Image 1 (tube, rainbow, N blue to C red):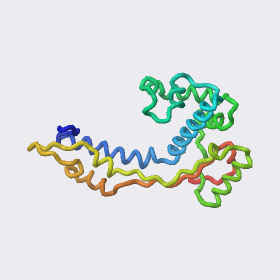
Image 2: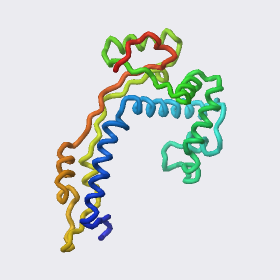
Image 3: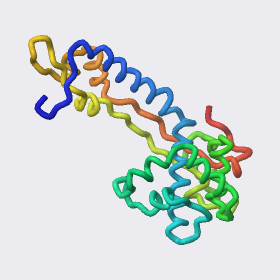
Length: 212
């Protein structure tokens, strides 16, 4: 209606379930420390692979991976290559990179393939200094052997404000949060805070205290 996405009032319950489920997933699944660490490890793999590719030193990359690594933004990647970058394609590249000579890429690929996330430790100044020294003493690059993730805020208010308008029986249009009291309350909660993380590669942290 007028360029805006609109739902009938009868569909509000389903949309409420979607937003409530999404909030629960962010708090208990997407925001879980292990999931956050694995996500960050994939980012590190991508950063290392891109650096090697642009230096002409990457052991392997098919046409689609080359397009991704060469791009400065996702909008620069042709759709056909984005469609090719599924889980099996990524794992195929990780297996190739796990046999390469570049230590950061090789270890990261091994750890992801074997589902061995970086070990999480309490993010204190003392532990941070200890982790950094362990990484330096091992001769590894701290940019790829340790992670520091700041506190993150997942904001629901912006998403809810972008939700479809609701068409009532009389034809009037109202924002979703004005029609659904529970979603209005969720909007008032505004956000979920994910705690900061400090983690280090398992290859160099055998005796570190684990954060539970």
